[in-house]
Structures are given as C-alpha cells and as structure tokens.
Image 1 (cartoon, helix red, strand yellow):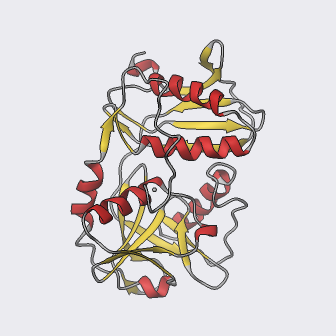
Image 2 (cartoon, one colour):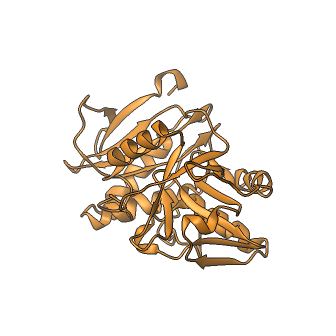
Length: 279
C-alpha cells in the first residue's frame, strides 16, 4: 500500500481482510488511536491491550482480535505521520480508520468544566467521543483549548482528550480517582519513565485550584506532553513548565518501529495498561 492510497476507514473481515467501509458506519462502542511517525509508535502493545480488553468484555473472542490486529498493524503506512484508529461498532464490526496526523501542538489553555462529568463510560474510549468533541468545542469557544473534568467533590480528573499529570516538588502526581479515568497509555508510559529514572510517583487528590501554581501536563498519544499554559477564566497564571521539554524528549525516545510482518506472538496478553506497568 502506498501512503497516497492509505487514507480512509476500512472494514475488517476474518476471511477476506480489509475493504472500504460504508459511508455511514454503525455507532461506536470502542475506539483506540495512536501516533505513527515513519513507522514508529509509542506503547503500541498497550493500545492493543486496552482496545482488545474492552472488546472481549463486549463478547468478541481473543482469537478474532488477534487476527484483526495482525492485519491492522500490517496495513499501517511505514512513512509519514499518521493517527490511525481501531473501532468496534454497534453491529459488532471491526474497522481501521487510517488518518493523517493533525498538527502536533505544544502548550494548552484549559477551562475547568463547570458541570458534572457527562461521560457515560469514562473508563472506555469510544462511546462518549461525540459528546467529548462537543464539550471541547464549547471550551474553545470560551477561549480555551480543552476542558478539564472534576468529580462531584471537585477533584481534577482528566480532560476531554488527555490524561492529567502534575508535579509537587520533585514528585510526579496523578489523580487518585480511578473510576473517573480512562486507562491512559501515554500517562502510563510517563509513569514508567519516571520510575525508571528514580522519580517518586504518587497518587494525589487535588482540585483545579490546587494546581494553578504547579507544573501541570495534559498528555495523550497524539501530542505527548502538553503543559498547561493558562487556566482560562481564573485570572491565575499557570506554573512554569521547566520539565516538559526534557520529558517530551524522553517520551519520544520510547517509540519503536512497527514490524513489517506482525507475527502471531503479539505481546498484549501479558500487558495491562496500569500506572504500575505502563497512558
């Protein structure tokens, strides 16, 4: 496959492989996406694990997902910058959407969402993506880049598109509210990097107000680390983000080349996307 012909949504069939998907796909149950730059990906096994685990919970067989992933990884372009997405639809179909990556962004202006977290399934990526896009658009209309959710008692959790991390002194912190968090692959990779570097990692309960003067990051598979540069509507300056450039380099260094011919021994069976092992 050439890069010029690679874009589009492909429907998978266990016998015939991939073919162009219908123009109006069925509703989305599970999704996962990641950045591919010249055939290199960060933590692909964790994206595979997260997507496959959700699909198995909904009744798909591990063997079928194994075959799907071998085909999907082989289908990805090995040159250029891409942001593919795997999908499980309401009609039980599996699909691969090969998309060119959008422009990678730096700092992020954040608006604390003033309402209750509206997600129906915060720990599964897919069902709420349309709603999250609407909320992000409303945040942008208010002068922000993204919206930060909180729990009912006001604790910061994550944004519409990214996991939340912050620094307290020399310690890297993440929210202590698992039931409200998507198991983020980039967050987990950064936690692993911190542990390997001898940095203390701690779960913490913090309100957005507690974070105003700290170095705060929103992290995801597309952009990596985006330091918070403005708390929109608060009149408060964001804390300096002196660590972010170095840690972004460390994160990029974790990218690995995709195999030209993925084997049947894809390494997700022993992988769990948790902060102790791998966001």
